[in-house]
Length: 497
Image (cartoon, rainbow, N blue to C red):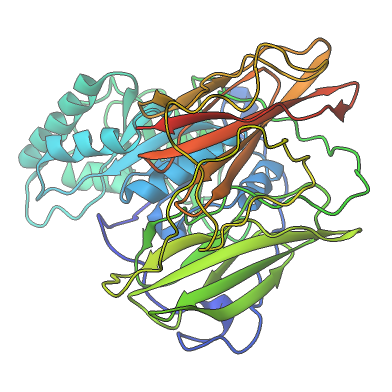
């Protein structure tokens, strides 16, 4: 694993762009998202193909996660070094039908209990099965007794958190050399590392250490997967079932241009460390190309920066001006042409302290405005557009108790009600004969409604983990019956605390 860093920044030039910093001169040479030959894990030992990633891999795009899936990946383990990236990686994996774990890289010179507590705080609300204690840092002169005591402190802190099983990640060389091959932790699940490209857990007989008899996971390679350069490849027994089963069948071609993409990252108001920036959106069925338009804040006006065209819905680039504001929007192309642009998402690159873009005063939304169909462009996120009302007293857009035939009703939460906690569960009434549901969520960014994400599932409910607190969200849902989606419901709104 060896993925160091708490609060570190990603530095260096982006090789795919062919240059460092400076205003871009040409479009990027994008990495092809080609799945690896499908690997189904170790069925003889009831283990699946699992991949672990850290903040060095940055946020993961839906297209990258789906490429993982096509390669056979069914489980993702996220590092807890940088909270926003950790949560995005977990959210993306869960939303694409995978099970998830997390790991905390332990530093011997930092309070062990504090490290473990912080790791759990960063994954609050996610259905992690195990929190892995990553034991591989250089002891820096500490002897085995001191390391064993510190490991025990971390284990005790982990068990005290509850809600997830606690495991050990390490390698035979490290454990035998620095931990004096102690058997003190042999009752915990073990995930061991040996980069021999042998994928079966049965190879444990060649590496036995620490008193363990039946490890649950092996890390056997570190190599790129679907363009993600720092992916670690693992075979792992996973005790939990996925929270969501994703319908991956391609819907019929509507004969229309694509809708505006949602799921923009970085989310509105995010801070991106100086290094490279990765901007992205959800993927759209039947889309063959995406355009990601980027602008830079010049202190008094937005300046066109660059528009990248890419067969994938993301791009990595090195912004030319650090400590500045950037914003981007995305549109998709299919056989019928280019669709509408999404709203804008603004992020801070580095530490910006200059004048901010002006924001128009708020104005209420007309509750009688008809709901746009799926192919219509979203409301403008231009700085001159008034934001939606977040007044908790605003009535719902439509009477959720009386939907048209085939349209889900009884949406909850709704009516501008307050929601809190790490996750929000969206529910609606079931539609007779429906085989799947699509939940489209928008968030308030101060200048309009911005597409947040669209989730698909087989049940009339959806749990998601909002990335931005203290703003309003709105959502709607539609049902698929006899292979075709019906009309969208009216929007429901809530205020996320």
